[in-house]
Length: 136
Image (cartoon, rainbow, N blue to C red; front, side, top):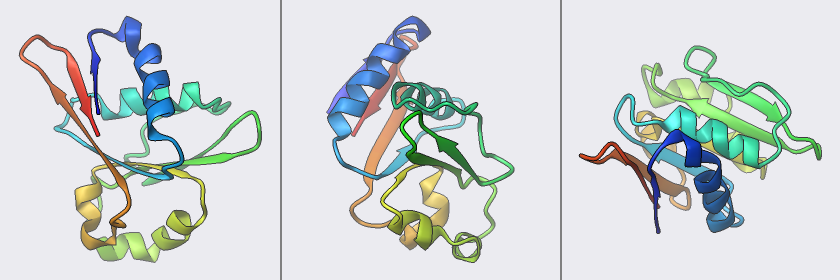
């Protein structure tokens, strides 16, 4: 499926479509160049899912745990600063993945083969027209 984000004014509509489309997937891996809009889009997705916490990039913390109004947890990962997949194992990535909670991951390529095969792979690219193309 492909969604197009023409401007930030439509980000919540596109995030809503994305949430409806991903169904019961709990592992969602976001690929894209630096500046493609991964974090911005994840913030909008979290908003649509009812997150009551402040959503920001977990660049330095590696993972942020957000609570929703109905008591669910959403985990937001940024693996950009990992030096090796072993670091992900050291902080318990497998427990997060097995939790059944939604795991939204930026820079999943940094964890290599630890990314489960059933993870939904999402690629965000910037078109020549400046639109963000979200393909999954």
